[in-house]
Length: 142
Image (cartoon, rainbow, N blue to C red; front, side):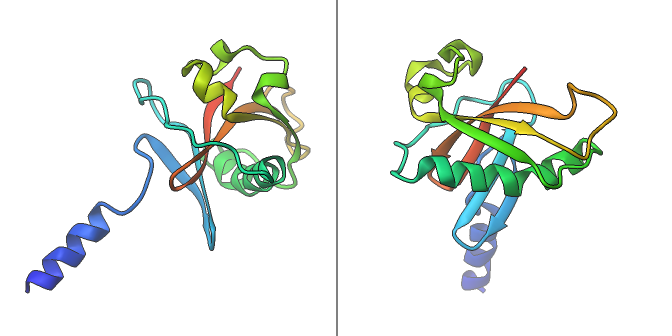
């Protein structure tokens, strides 16, 4: 009986990122979306790995269909360009979580070709960082 209670407790507190929806959960890759509501604390960004630009491009590509589905839009076939945040053309204030988090982030510029009704809805900019449980699109830059 105790083992069942312990298992239940482990399932309830499974890894995650409070305030951020899990968009992608495939072997060796989890991707979380932007904060779901105001007041979500800033993330604790980890140092970027050597292959960070390619990893972020893949993570964002996989995250766009479920992210856009939540907005009732078509996120298929996203076109993504990535740059280290420090050379993105944006200032650390764009993300709102300080210089240290910004320095450990990558900015992803996303274009969604299947959204033709609105130019603003067909383009997104995200700050993306590595966290303990995967990657997170921690700032949706407008």
